[in-house]
Image (cartoon, rainbow, N blue to C red):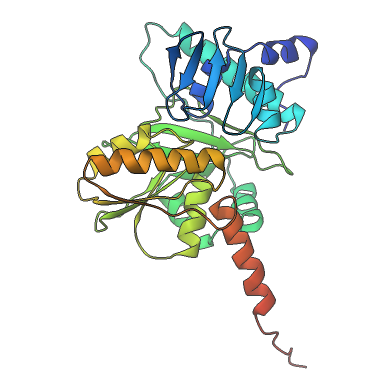
Amino acid sequence: MNYFTLSEETVAQARNADIIAFFEKYHGYEFTPKGNSYRCRQHQSLAVKNDRLSWYWHSKGIGGFGALDYLIKVENMPFREAVEAVAGITAATVQLRRETVKPKMLILPEKSGLQLRLYDYLCGKRGIDGDIVNRLIQEKKLYEDKRGNVVFVGYDEHNRARFAALRGTHGDCSFRMDCLGSDKRYGFNMACPQSERLYIFESAVDLMSHASLDKSEYNRLSLAGTSDTALSFFLNQHKSVKELAFCLDNDPAGREAAGIMAEKYEDRGYITRIELPKSKDFNEDLAAYRATFHKDKPKTERSI
């Protein structure tokens, strides 16, 4: 899915994009000045120098220059997709800065007439239960846009769309970004007012994967990263929640963020626990379950 022509100018702009602005938009990370660098509030071992380009993630032992290096080295993203991701976020950031007078408004992409790529990606490639997909489509929290992306939507207390994240569906494309004007307080979720338990994930796909593995009705929330911005707001709007299960990715960044948040919200009076997936994330767990299920399922004889 080539949204951007990879000209020398485009690549140069991606290489020199402000990485702190990139992290804030891409993961919701927040940074504070500390000496001759900036430190990430969510991951204390992630540091960015005052040039706002050079970075080093001490707990991972990885460093680099700019957002491209981060996506390629840390997230294993192919070069073209990394350039597209940085260019898209940079363009959105520039546009937001221009809107100094206008109120922040979410711009949702136009809907496709069909949902074929959505079903192929979520149910076929990701193994997510079709009933869950249908439910979220009916609730208008999920749809396919004109370019074939899956759109995950979060709503405010007045049922107005306030957050939307795009996920590419073509081939092995890992294209993803938040829509212009998204407010990360309003995370994609599956709310259950009767439940006192909330499961918390880094992504909407992992949320849906967990719901496919465990059909029980619980509150489930995607953070769209590892910032707890959406969590704080969800808890303010759902006072019945007493228990928090942090189900972030089973990697250094996810484990670190889960530990920090579990301690933070335990101090606020919640019952907290960490429930990491067996694999890297819950979608990989779901894929492993599907593979085992089909392998062990007895074959039936066809009638002649």
